[in-house]
Image (cartoon, rainbow over all chains, first blue to last red; front, side, top):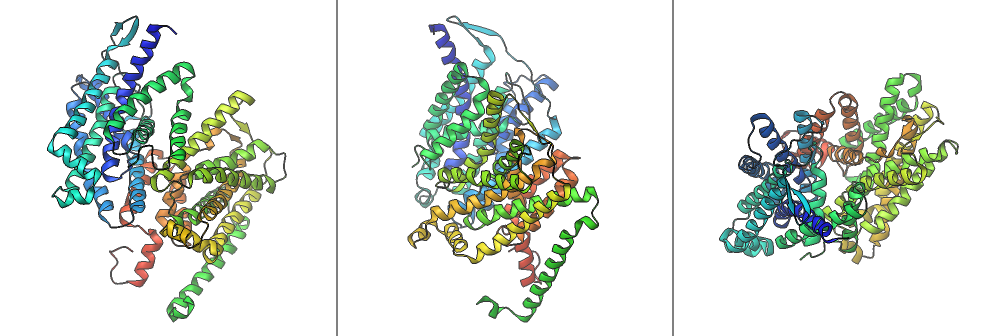
Length: 291
Length: 319
């Protein structure tokens, strides 16, 4: 294996990994704070991708500028969903397992609703467009500009959000709620408000990722679930509620997968991601770094 | 004990229900006398749904383990019939399907029943997909096919009576389980697993045993239904089956004996009418139904009916 090939695989892995990190961060934000395992998370990625696709092919809007539309839109949808669905399930004083199961069922319901709404709106035909598919050369390897840009934006948003959690007052409040929900509420942090906010931000991250990948991946209404599974693998790998873990886990999974696809075959991907997920669950029933 | 506390009115409504059940059983047994081929197919599909929903509920109802493995066990049973390919006389493939389903569930149960809450659900959700890809990998790599013909066909009414017996057997199992030590142990697992264990219940044995029993029914239903397709490919491992069954049971009510039956007939009819013509609308509606049931009807239609019977003047609240 020569050096430029290794470089090629490394960069490709990091590009995919940056995208995984952002989806996983969004899912982790919802799960870490509320214990809502939102299996419809990837559906918002799919919606973001389709909205960008429609704006670009219909009105010629620059795909990167559509982030300014998809992100606030998804945030608003997240707030609305939290208010309409999850808040009602989460306030009742039942056992945590029952609450987790009920919120999981709600997300499965959402998955069906969103996926089939997308099928009705955009049909099951494969859609796609090319934007910024200019080849760039580094050290003998060739990368497409749109992927570099997408990975840069995804990593920028992820790192930015991580710093926001570390540095800002609101970020501290969120981390306090994750670590000690009762104590945090005692010192005056509003749980329902931050739940809604984090749910919205999480979904916005998913939609942003969708807008970004629509520049170079083909779209069908079925793409969401595989990203949800990937994000699940990442957050279980990196630790539930551990944001740095999601960032690192996303990058690592991207690298491992790229290596795996290079040395084995690409059609084993679904087996590998479910297999890894099952294996982690069997070996560590409550996640690798669960607090 | 409980019987002494039932009022006169309640006793009468129970005997009315018995009479209704008797009529229903006679009508189902005598179906060849009056059902057209179309209605026979519909009745068969509904009976299969009932058998799946009831067998899902006798494990997942009391234990609250949200299993999404139905599609995997059903698929395993169906694929068993296809692999046997008519080498065994009719009821034997069904028996084989039951054994394959139960064996599959034993392996899954040993691995996964330590997981709680959503982890178990996520693990079982992946099973159908995993099984499908493994079978595709095996078939393309070793046998060079991706599908199988089922040429040996038992008679249509034979299949009907097989599935009818399975549905009846599943309902009978629910009754028996509820009154047995295992049934109480399952309820104990559902309300507080650690306490149940402290009280001397071998929770692992009970959980895996009943999980395998429910999977045996699912495998048997899959094996019985397989000849209806003539041609079978690995897509028979369908995660959608798992969801449909969960929605049926939750809609009907997971904690009542007849809830799964009511839910299965309801959703089964809806899918029969809508699935082929308005596929996406149907699935969309199914998702909305799931959300509505979780939010507004936590004990399902049977819970609602029960509540209305007790509080006839306040029909708006739910149980």
